[in-house]
Image (tube, rainbow, N blue to C red):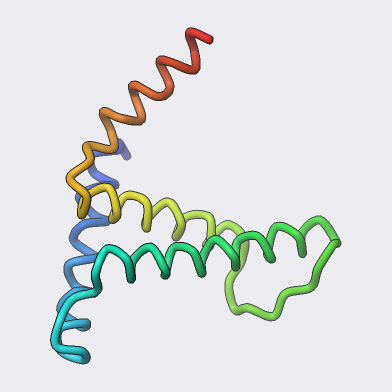
Length: 100
């Protein structure tokens, strides 16, 4: 599966979440609320990574792989909401790193 397809699927799923937000709260989450959700998920990812390394125990119902994928999903969503072409930016970033 290519990046374009992953981004399209991500955007479609997030649109469904926006429908739930409208239904339950009267408006969709702001970019700041999305960032807060990402921050929370990054914290969960950190605890899961520490648990895997034997440095922490975690009681969340998630697994490391799932939470890592979810964080990528949030980043794709935020790129979309902030009008950032994440595929182009990722390509530029990787090209710059390869030159270094």
